Image (tube, helix red, strand yellow):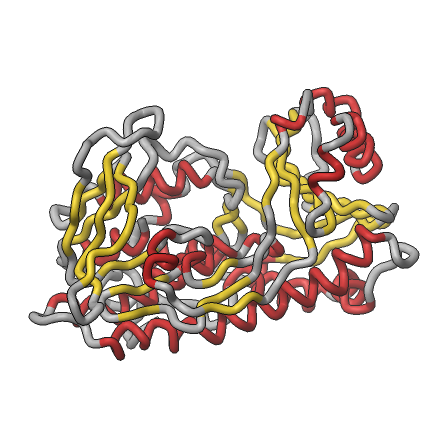
Length: 406
């Protein structure tokens, strides 16, 4: 949606295909980091964006056993971007769609499911084929549709249909954890908004959504089946061990239908494109939920993609393969570095905790950060802005600095 908005704003006729009828789904990736807030600010959209329902997370705090610690402080960033906006992703998507629809070059087709690629005899991608879905998800048209394009960009997630159709090569980094997601009603009088709660054998993330907690309960990879074979009361008790204050509210977990499994994967394509087709976001690199950086890394991909390709798409003729490869070259290092950090946290922090292999104690780096405010601001900057954060090019910007590709 961000890429479609940027390209249309540059004067490029752009169509976004979305298979669902609306955005009202529980995405869970609802953390809008300072890097994305800055992009919105450079586009002149931040003030309007912040009119949508959200909560501001200005510090990252956690309970480690009986010890309360601070791991990040966003106060070192410019005031307009010095927080994480905890906004439901459907609000973010609806906001972007509303802004994009104001542009004559932008078209959003809902209930349009892409089934595969259209290619010529030489293998160049010419567009996509698909079908329109009814409200129940079944095909609404017998023959489907075809949409031709000078450039097709796959933003269709870690289970990308287009990535599979293009047979692009990739590599698995691997993840030793999975996550169970669920909601627990939040007491309106609660003042402790700590993000993580850690006790021996249990790691729980509690995201303050105002009237409820969005909870992420970390389990060993593949452990869901054995857990779900037991009564839901077993999960309730494990959650209560990590967060005793939730115990009175755990009746919200009536059964396993109230729990969603995220099978965590970290992978990336070694080839992000072929002639006429480019993958970005989770379609190019699936991220762990550690740090909540996935949505923001995808936004950075979109900005870099628009910066690098907009002028070339305005010129006559097809894009050269090297033009598409330039996006991968620009975004590969921050992607691989971020995945390496996520893997290290999973391996050295999460797995020892949930497997109970050692007594619960703060790892030395965490201990240092919790005692040094300057390190807390550094951690927040790295988490909030990411590695090689993208600026909006002057082609699109309202408030952006001039310069080359972000």
